[in-house]
Image: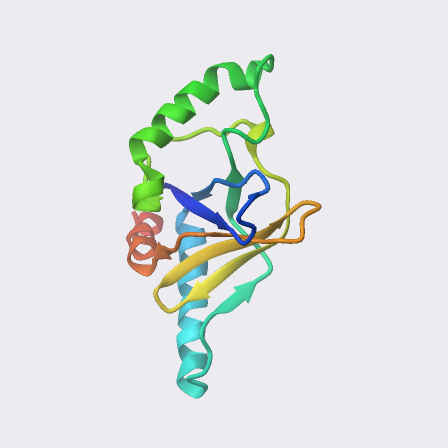
Length: 158
C-alpha cells in the first residue's frame, strides 16, 4: 500500500523540494513501525515524560512537482501530468494523508535530496522528518495512524 503525506517546512519561504512524501507500506514495514510504537509505549510507562522517539532511517520519499522541471526528460513527460492529476484528486492539502487508488510513480528528478532522514514514532502513529540537502531547516510529514499500519499487517499472513 502506498500513502501520500502532506509535508511542512520549518522555513516559511522554502521547503527544499518537499511538498509531499510517498511511503510504501509493506507488511514488514508496518510490523517494524508497530514494534517501535510498542517500544515507545513500554518506555513511556517507565518515564511518562517521553513523548516521541526518532529512528535514523526513513521510508519516505520527499518530493515536489515544482522542484525540478521535467520538461525535456523522457521520464517526466508522461508521469508528471498523471501525478499532478492524482495529487489533485487526493486533495493532500485538505486531507494531509491519502491512499492512492492506483500506484503512484514519482520520477527520480522530482524526489528531493535529503539528509538526516528519520522516522518519528509516537503513541498514535509514525511520521517522517528530514533536512533537505544543503539546507539549515527541516521538513516534517503528517502522521500515519497506528490503525492504518495495523490494517497492513494481516497482508503478511494471507
